[in-house]
Image 1 (cartoon, rainbow, N blue to C red):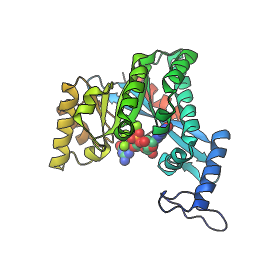
Image 2: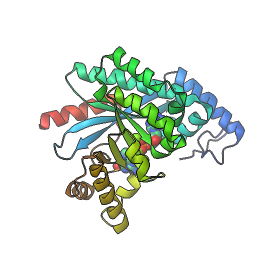
Image 3: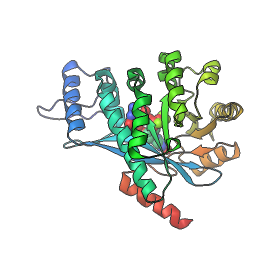
Length: 280
Ligand code: C2E
Ligand code: MG
Ligand code: MG
Ligand code: MG
């Protein structure tokens, strides 16, 4: 969502294709300030198990509280962060914050798994397994409470390197999920080789699941395929009771989306959990 700013302000948030180098430089420098100046905040969006109707996981989603622009969504800055390498610092921040939060939930008796989106740059850096192992120790959280979300295209950049790195992370006991599944270069032969635990069906298939025969067929097929590979399957972008009904009927394991909750700042997420707990 590009914003046009008046006066001598540079237009910061534009799609990367049409942004001039001057604008990109301005965005890069204000993103640097955001990282060092405490403007980044992690929001949390729950994932719900359909069988138990309980919250299993919170996905960490980055937000930028810009002093003048207000809340900026990741779609407006993750791209440039990747290109400039700033994604590594953002990724470090999110991982640390996610682990710290998980340990804080544990201390109040809440066992909530945290799910962190990992960028291609973080996979390329190569030290991710060590970094994660250190974070789990530092915050004293069991590995199974951390999940990483990785997209198909990231894996396909270098499939052999990805398999090796992901296997090391999996060996720590960390859970791995393929995000936006169905939109990348899905090849069933690589899926079998990847040490992942779950597939997350992309929102684009879910939104018309109850009107579009292709989307519902694809969704059913992904669920069946996941289960036959011993993977769990989650649907993202679940917005209606009809979505829930369809996914429940076809044996999807978990759901996530506005129908359950939007991504929330931590205080609101905690209230959400408390309300759920009271309701039993
Ligand atoms: P994603 O990981 O696929 O996250 C799902 C996106 O869909 C989130 O957008 C979420 O707010 C939105 N969403 C969730 N439920 C619904 C729904 O029911 N309907 C609709 N229309 N949207 C829904 P968000 O937070 O803007 O994040 C966008 C993308 O930015 C994420 O897609 C992820 O690829 C990336 N991202 C977010 N946080 C991080 C991060 O910490 N690190 C990295 N590397 N990428 C991140
Ligand atoms: Mg995700
Ligand atoms: Mg996704
Ligand atoms: Mg998506």
